Image (cartoon, rainbow, N blue to C red; front, side):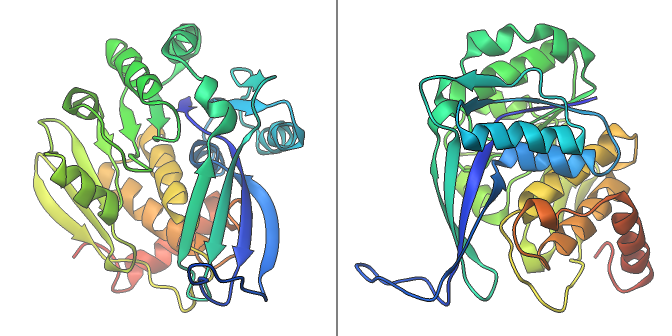
Length: 299
């Protein structure tokens, strides 16, 4: 079972003709409101690849929070360890998406700020059942630290997606089995003094430039799975992480897990919104066959 610890939030998306200038009001946008939060997105991506998933997060006692439970029920994601806050609203993210598919996101964390290390520690039973732990940085820093420590104590592999990028101790990062930043986040952590530790696998997602993987065997690059048209890149990183996690949980080797994540995230950018864009197992299987039979693959 994959245990995903972190965030759920509602995505409020505006498809805009361009990003407005400072002080400018721009007409002509299209509004959509949907499910979001990096951890929930990653949980959906993993579940759609056929693995069991449990989620730990906090939502508000509001319509957005209630919608979240409906989503997890439909997707078959375990939500018995999700808390409901009576004091704070469900996290929300405002997303501007340009015609190119590029996006800009601002987040109000809301109920996620009520997550504490003590509360996570009380979830020891579900940690004992996990074969893999996945987390991002949309929850409080001390929760991240507590989560990786609890996983390490149980010798459970950890996938750490350091997004949004913020300072972490070197000790916390070193406990991650798989460290998966995008290229912007990777540059941030290099400036903070990051270097891969022994036994850790670094996976840098670089959009159109493909993926860089570094481990004990050295560095290697994977070409992207090129799509004719990019519509919305908002959930691509989460789709990559969730699909990769599913591959590792299923016992696939690193090479195949990375390739599956590449094609899955590439499919997702051809569709609007996050959850509707995440592909299912059969679709990734078919895309992987195309990717491996074409010029795609390891560089």
